[in-house]
Amino acid sequence: MELISPTDFAKEKVLAVQEYALLSAHAIANLFRQPRYFADIVQQADFIGFGSLPIVVLTGFFTGAVLALNSASTLQKFGSLTLIAQLVSVGMVTELGPVLTGLMIAGRNSSGMASELGSMVVTEQIDAMRALGTNPIKKLVTPRVVSTVFMLFFLTIISDLLGLFGGAVISHLVYAIDWHQYWTSAWQALAFRDVFTGLVKPLLFGFIVSTIGCYYGLSARGGTQGVGRATTQAVVAASVLILAVDLFATKLLMAILGNR
Image (tube, rainbow, N blue to C red; front, side, top):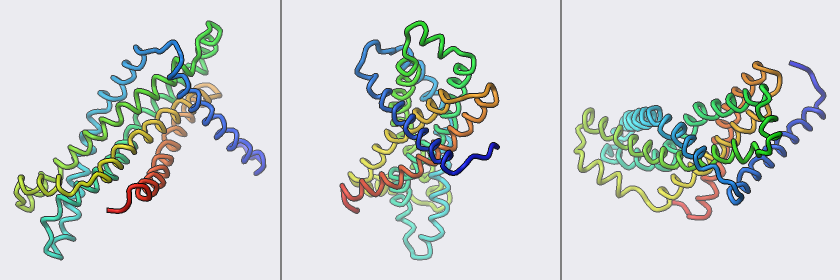
């Protein structure tokens, strides 16, 4: 690793933030300009959405099951085992469902976007697109952003549902809680603030996953090694940003919608 002065290091980070902000702004602005590459959007939606469905289903189910299993031991001490459905419901819908789904999509798709676009950069395919008069951001970035935001929204809903189902399986098989009682309690525990919070976060996380993956892919330099570094950096940056944005989004939504 090359040693640089703190000033140059700070300048590089500020420049990276500036370039990322410009890329994100251009990706959004291209939504309102012709041409619109609907075929690319559908193709990316299929890869991002349906391709990620197995890992999202498994993650949601086992997260709900583990949440029910771990919380039951504490609730039993206070004689409140029937509250397990409420805990699983609120925890999955407001926090665990969106965050874990976002992290899974970041690990699968941010890396894929970074490696794909990075390979196009080092093989000069991006330069060829510019030479032919095609805007690379409009052709490559905007469809990925739209598809990721759209599909992550529905993947999060599926993850929430599977998490509740996983909690129901553990509650019924291990703690003999009635199915109807569990689902009724889980449904009644959810307030508008919980559902709204759980559905806003995937939109933010989808934007982060797609723009971070595309940014590091388009910024790849140094051949195949540079593509590998860009892939790793994309996953790390997207994961950290998801956790950071989750904190601030939760605080902001609590301030706007109020506490439970």
